[in-house]
Amino acid sequence: MFQEKHAWWKESVVYQIYPRSFADSNGDGIGDLNGITAHLDYLKDLGVDVIWVSPVYASPNDDNGYDISDYRAIMAEFGTMEDFDRMLENIHARGMKLVMDLVANHTSDEHAWFLESKKSRDNPYRDYYIWRDGKNGGAPNNWGSCFSGSAWEYDAATDQYYLHLFSRKQPDLNWANPRVRDEIFAMMTWWCEKGIDGFRMDVIGMIGKENMNDGPVGPGALYGDFGPSCQHTETTHRYIREMRQRVLNRYDLITIGEAGGGTADAIRYSNADGTELNMTFGFEHTDGINDHNEMGKWSDHGTPLREVREVLNRWELDLQGKAWNTLYLSNHDQPRQVSRFGNDSPLWREKSAKMLATLLHMMRGTPFIYQGEELGMTNIYFSSLAQYKDIEVHNAWRQWVESGKVDAQDMLRWFARISRDNARTPMQWNTSANAGFSTGTPWISVNWNYLEINAASEMADPDSVYHYYQKLIALRHTHEIIVYGDFTPLMTDSESVYAFRRELNGQVLTVLCNWTDRTVPCALSDSRSGSDMISNYPEHKTGFLYPYEARVFLQ
Ligand code: GLC
Ligand code: CA
Image 1 (cartoon, protein in one colour):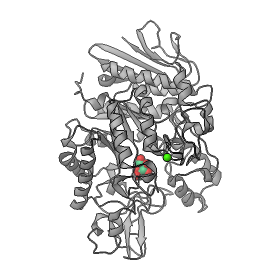
Image 2 (tube, protein in one colour):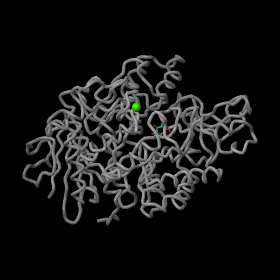
Image 3 (cartoon, protein in one colour):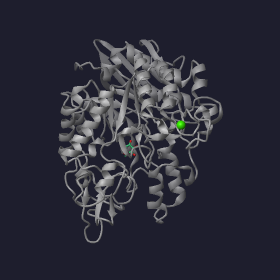
Image 4 (cartoon, helix red, strand yellow):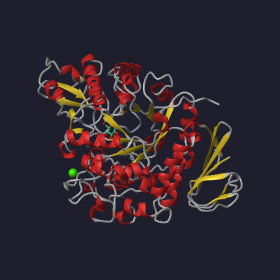
């Protein structure tokens, strides 16, 4: 058995807040910092240790704050720096920690550095970004942006193109320039000195651009893939190690890379020898399973148990003993997990939400809960383009539908299934107007199901999804085996059951999850076989699992 080194960030449960949609304190329809501060007791009662807030910095909101115009100021809509300081103080007063979103692959095109950079070719800030001459009357190379269209934007004033791997309002920083690294590291230090407890590092795997070569063009794709030149390069690892040396090592932080890639990449980013980050998010079980054609995420591909289990088990096994893992099924870039992996019909919503939670929270790694997940919040299933706010959706519509390449109805179906706005509808607090999120008009529609799914009702119901999450979190805090136990997959041929075992110091924890809406045979389900730690059913049937049943027992 591998002896895992203990660390507080391995024992923690993280809760992600998407500030715009969490709680609005002043009735302008937009969530804000004072709204977060007002709900800290809710999070404390839930039992989470760490709060990660999506970006709260000054931003023109082309991509909801992932386009930062000033790293040392708070977005006016979210409040002031005093509000931030009070929020941080209140988080710490309750014994919780705060993780900031570090978006440093790119800035907003309204950031002072970029405003200078585009003034002239010899501006001192020119080299803060990636400018290139055009080629053959077009862009410098064939790369496509993550948000559709070319990754290059032409600037007539200086007759050059700048690189933007996301929207054209998110120009990529040039990390090869040592002054850029100095600026970013100084900014990170400034936040650490303020007392924050860690960083979630946005698309950090893309910071090291190794060359500007054309990328491979998949069948039917409109642009080349920048991946081979920009993703998980040696240069990126070198910058992260430099960041570790110059900033991270000076504080006791939790560091999470949004890096993606395969397990070999994750093992390098979050290696146990501690030269880079604590852990990284993988995307193989989300985007990896979903993206099946030249249109990337826009597809009908579901989440078959076999595929999900193969990925999650492989990540557990490959990382074991080598690197720490992250555990998540949803975030602000993914649809709601109960809609995607479970069953959001009124009949099975609660059972399947609890089953998915059991599966994830019993695995080896640090669990991440995305706001509202602990209530079993579902997709909103918008039916028209006008209801969407997300730039990714509107750009994709332009690229595929307006150009006549794809049928509008197909696209709307894919949006409803997989788009990010599903996760961005307001937090459902109670049964009052707008689910208690805001007294004004929310910036994005509230899910109609808030009368049934909301925090107040669930807190009053001991059998709710909320209380189930509370129990799972408490179990992780009291049972070392859940944090540090070895992971062994079970029943890997089953079409209906996801099962695994954890082991530590002679104890064995067995986790059984029925992924279907049918009662299915399961030889491991024996009610005499140990003490039940948690389950979403009050009784069990030897040799079977009920629809979406989850059972955990300790022997
Ligand atoms: C990350 C964020 C996403 C954002 C993108 C560009 O993937 O999670 O929300 O759009 O980076 O910053
Ligand atoms: Ca507000």
